[in-house]
Amino acid sequence: MDRIPVAAVVGPTATGKSRLAVELALRHRGEVVSADSMQIYRGLAIGTAQPAREEMRGVPHHLIGFQDPERPFSVADYVALASERIRQISERGCMPFLAGGTGLYVASLLRHRSFTPEGRDDVLRESLFHRAEAQGPLALWEELKGFDPRSAERIHPNNIARLVRAIEIYRTTGTTMTEQVERSRREPSPYDACLIGLDYRDRNRLYEAINRRVDSMVEAGLVREAERVLGLPAGTTARQAIGYKEFLPYFNGECSLEEAAEQVKRESRRYAKRQLTWFRRQEQVEWIYLDEEPDFGSVCRRADEILLKKGWVLQ
Picture 1: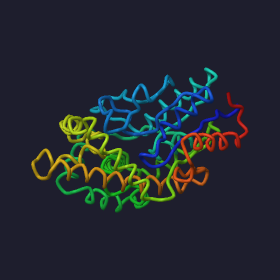
Picture 2 (picture 1 turned 30 degrees about the horizontal axis):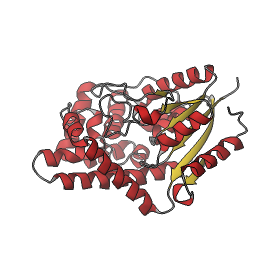
Picture 3 (picture 1 turned 180 degrees about the horizontal axis):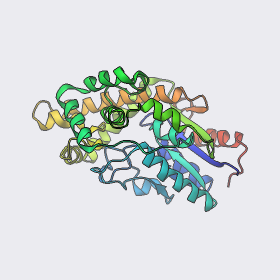
């Protein structure tokens, strides 16, 4: 069976991935599938930078704002849903465009990881989240490093959700996340993937874009949204998202609003570094440097050239 062409627009936060994906979808009769682990949640439009209806420009978008923030959602869930959406888009004779910066989602989908049923223990999970709050995430990371050093190397010490999941898998199944990942790589991918990366040569330009985005989010009502998200149960993944947890000291009267917003900017810049580290390891990504292009039209033409190099018949 012929593989399904899938183009993915990836890279760090605040580089305009959604905007480019929409433009390419308009040019090539496509639809957009989000590859962002936080944009899935309903009611978190500001902090997760979900594209507004006018920004979608009539292009169908999938896997945005559909999930209850209090319900669990795994990489396996994402792969299953995204695979189904891509199949449906292709059957309509349209081109699927992924857009997002969650490298684990992109890699798991395009490499066609086969997920086996994994252990789940809600009581254990809640206790691990409480432990992270009481002792700090580094305590979980050190525990993970003791039995699964390869996962500890992949997972950032501040990524509480993934640390909890890795420990939960081991304690409930007796196998490590690394072992499960290795077992999952069984079948060849059904996708002919083209990865287009967006970045800046000048790192300061990226950081300026991140800072501007955070300022815009605050003006749009991020603080009210953060207050609502921080009222969710302790084990909720959305509570750990950048742009929400940084406001907790502000709500507790421990810092000013300006200091909390600055912390969001710092954490967003750190997250961008981690995103770049992930995607730089993917040799198949073809990069477009935004500060080397004169305007957005030029960026789109460069993306078209990358797509055409694949030899795809585009609309």
